Image (tube, rainbow, N blue to C red; front, top):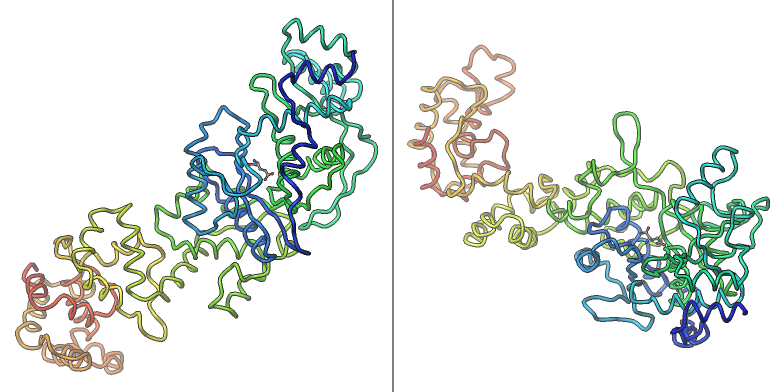
Length: 548
Ligand code: GLU
C-alpha cells in the first residue's frame, strides 16, 4: 500500500485535485502594487471593535492601491450559530460603508473566488489535505485525548516543550498498513501536518508593522483536519483560502504572530508564495494607572453595536479608530478636512507595535461632537430621525410631527463661526432638547440658582411677561429689555458695576435671566435663551410661567 492508496481510502469521493482548484481560481490579474486584502472574522454573534478596526485597514489598503477587499467568514468552528452572525458582520460593514468588493450574503456570491464561507469549502480543503497525504506531508493521528493529556503532563514534568513534535509525534511513525488497519477498525482520527522544521533553527520573516522578526522554526505536527466534522482547523483553512483567493496582505491580530512559521511552512509545502503580514496591536484602554485589553465582558464599547445603539455618527467612529491606526492621521485630517479616511495613505510602519493601541471613548466623544457641530441642522435631523426610528420611537414620532420646528431647534447656535458642540451622539440630543416639546415638558423641582425666594421669582416672571415680553422683539431689543427688567427690580444690569459694588444690588442680570431660563426649560444651562423663547412662542411661554 502507498500514500496514494491511503489518501484514496481517507477521501474516496474527492476527485478534484489541487491543480484543478488552481485552474478554477486562477491567479488574479493585478497591476503593480495592487493589493488584495480580506476581513476574515469567525462569526461569533457579535462584532468586536478590534475586528472592525482590522476591516478598516483592509479596506484602506485595497482602496489605496486600487485592489480588492473581500469578506470571508471563517466558520469552521461549527459549535457556533452561523447564519445570523454572518448577517451581523455584513450589516455592520454596510452600516459603516466599509463594503467588501467580494463576499457571500444570503446565498448570493459576489466575486469569482467563492464560496466565501468556509463551511461551504470542505471539498476544497479535502483535496488539499489529500494531496499532502499523497506526498507524505500529512498523516492521520489516532491519539486519544487522554493520551495527549498524559503526554502534556510528562512534557510539563520534564520541562520539555509542549506539543506534538519529534519523538512525541507518536502517530507519525505508523506504517501505512497500520494506519489503514486502524481506519478499517473504525478508530477516530484527526489529520496532522508533517512538519519538516527544526526547532533549533531560526525562522526569519517580515511583519510590515514590526519589521523583520525571527522565531524558532516550527516543528509541531499541527492538526489540520478535525475528527468529528472533518472540517479543517483555522491554520489550514485560512492558508488554502488565502492561497486560492490570492490574498496579498493578511491583516490580523497580533495573537497570530507565533503561528507565522507554521503558516509559511504550509504555503511552502504547496510551493506557494506566502502573503505579506500585518499583525495589528491589541486594542487597549486605560483603567486607573494601568492599561488593559478592551474586553467584551467589561466594556460596552468593545462591541460595535454599542456605537449604533448610542447613535454615534459612523464617520466619527471610523475617525476615532483611524487615530489609533496611524499616529499621523489626526494631523493629516486637520490639514485635509474635506477628505475621507479612504484618501489617507495608510502606513503599517506607523502603527504602534508595542503596548497595544490605546482606545479612549472620550476621544470619540470629542471627535463626534466636532463632527456633529459641523453638519447642517437638516442633516442632523435626518440622522436623528433614522436613529430614533430604531432606538426611540416616541421621540421619532414627535420629531416627525414637528419636523421644521425640530430642525430649527437643532439650528440654534449652529450657523456661526464656532458652532455649539453639545451633541456627542444622536442619543444625547433628546436629553438636551426635550423641554422644547410640550408633550415631554414636565413640571419638576426647579432650581433657580441664586434667587431662591418664591415671591421674588414670581415677581420677576410676572413683570417680565406683563411689561417686557414682546414676541416680535429682535435679539438686541430683547436683551435690553431683560436689562431694564433687572434694573426695575433692583438687579445690576452691568456686570462691571455689580462686581465693584455687589452690596448695592439684589443680584445681577444673569440671575434674572436664569430665572426666566429655568422657568421655561427647567434647566439652568441651555443654548441661547432668546432663540429658545422665539421658537417656543408666546402661548407656551406663558403656560410655563404660570406653572411656577
Ligand atoms: N478567523 C480568525 C479570527 O477571527 C481570523 C484571523 C485571520 O484574519 O487570519 O481570529
